[in-house]
Length: 486
Image (cartoon, rainbow, N blue to C red; front, side):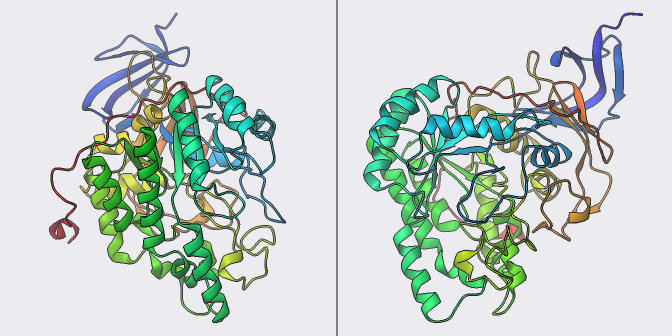
């Protein structure tokens, strides 16, 4: 008997970035070829029984297998990182090809392709990280790479070996404008951080909690304002990444209200971690939560939720930066009581991003399921030129989707996760949503608690021109809605 479809998902409660509906989903050759009621038979049939089905997650900000100076290594490569993504419902990832100072940008991209190999079980694209904005790079290499499908790149306003000067940032934005690329900006003021760090260390303050004190909100606010000013000067859209709190959010909303194309991203660490997680005077296990910008005070989490509700943030990414804790090549590269300024910066989060936000955002009523799909999938695919192939439950899109289990309460335990990191900062948080099944191009990757992906299923994606939606204008100045947060 010949079947009409390779796969049919029956009775799916579909959610897109725009609406929700009941449908059967018919898949042929890895593509969604029909959405409707009572579709013809499939070679494989799955009854979703009315469970939520959303497009596969697109994580537009994660770090895997990056070369790092010194004896530090990332725990996740292109085998373990994508595996953990799939188990958490993410079917497309966009990690970074890092240019070292003095290195050709093209060489950095080629080396990163070699690191990726044929290992990934989910589809992937690359951003570039630009650390050397010389004339050769800006006039020749960058335009050629944009043309070849690397249409987004990240620049830093901090970290001595990565940051660009103001003039270099302006030059770089001008290239992005001319060639239609999207610039992601890590906005923190380097000189303020360096000055504060020196003073803290001179006073003998080395514990993890002082990491946050070396990077107060104003260093993010100032750099965010400066990045916005440069983008306004050059007339080019930018994305401010991993926005941590109120002061930067106010700058971004001000810019959006002026009609500037300023986009913003936030991450789980700013909703679920706080300064409390950076421990006390002698709590060196708190190095597990060192990331930049750091988690802010507990009240600040409410501002970040407000920013999500108000659509200030276009996207919600993990910023997965995997360094194991009890590891001489990870968080303990400088011993088991390292000075905060020496700790490998970043936390893991690829697998937990979607369950955390679905549970504590959608199921608690803070955001709608349409908003969830927008910020975790649809907007990300648009932002990086992968839409409508990715981020969509529509005919002709790749058959990337999640069937959700929202009936089972779970507690996040690192022992149950699939990354290669020896901890999760979200240990002990309960969630009542987790992917039951994850499909990529019609192939089952994750099935009821079991990782079943074929090795190397993932394909490299060339990105088209970024097509981010217009930022929302906020009708009134940013105000906390006390009542929403109980």
